[in-house]
Image (cartoon, rainbow, N blue to C red; front, side):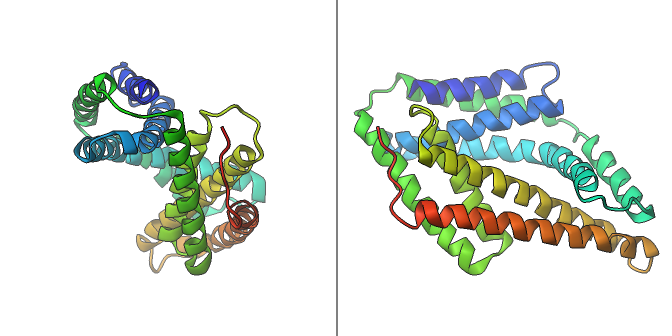
Length: 266
């Protein structure tokens, strides 16, 4: 209960800083919101449904408001990393894409900081109420919550393996992230923790590459007849190859982890 409040407080405190929209500050805020969402999932059985849904909605709304600023930075960084790692030739098309991504990264919507502070304070007041409330949660209830997340993660993995769409992969990735943060409350070093962290890392990179692929498509639409669009073909092929390898490894570890019943131990 108090861990949930601490994660929300850390996120809201970051929003009140003068550099709240700095890219690293946004990154830390979103991480704390993800931890809060994972902790909230463990508290679900001890909270009234209305309270649980209200908090979940508040976290989602705040995280969504931050997503655009963070995603623009991630896509720009992913491009730079890919160019170094895959030795893609930096031609005119790649240079144009790079500049477009930098412009997007540095664009901050008017009034965003004010809106974020308002959302954050609303969420903090609600979290205070939950922290003071009386619940009947016991340690075994938290463990039951983790096991429920494990089962759902396995189901989402099977769906993602069967369909391989952006939506199913994204759903599995979010579930893995939630399980990762829930498992972090246990003593470190378990085999399940290590595997879940590795899957989260692989799916995270895959998602970053997917966002870069979407940015390439958007950029190309601005130059339908231009040679700049064709200049990006080698980069797009490199992204496809890299994503195939990442997904193959994530599913390999995932099937070994969730193919049988994964059970967090106290």
